[in-house]
Image 1: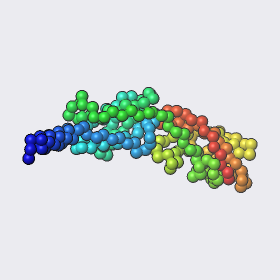
Image 2 (image 1 turned 90 degrees about the vertical axis):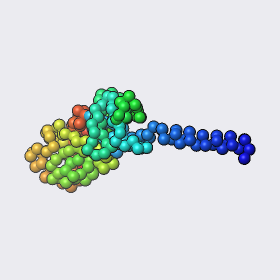
Image 3 (image 1 turned 45 degrees about the horizontal axis):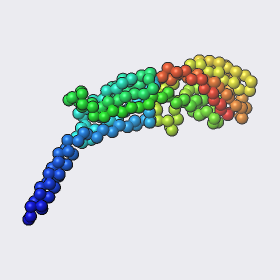
Length: 209
């Protein structure tokens, strides 16, 4: 083996050793996901899932700006509740060295989407039973959020007669009147609902009997 071949072989060995050392010293790969949505919602505690690859599981902590962060009972999951700003910054930090930042994420903070109104078991815009008796708001299956909405007040109108009330349940007078209606009558409603974000939403809806 000549001198050039010896030098080349030694160079290859050094390159392999360097790459091995570099790979072993690489930062863990950090990924984040939001199981419920693509953003954070103001007033709503969102689940944030963090995974640290390359042997980093369980060796980090999550610190946030413009939010509160609480560890979930499930591994790698945190409950993040945004503040009043338009974005949240989440920092994944080495548990053994708080000055060692593993990854930084910026997330938008949005208002909660409007829920859908229901009369009894019937969604707004569908056929309903006159014995529905309750008005409430919730998210349909296509919006995988578990936010709860409180009915503050309501106004219903059918065939020129209107009733007003508060809370989920219709008044006895309203229920008695609905029992007298013929098939095909249309019930319209304006319902004020309050979400976990503190916003009171005025929502319109209608059902056919």
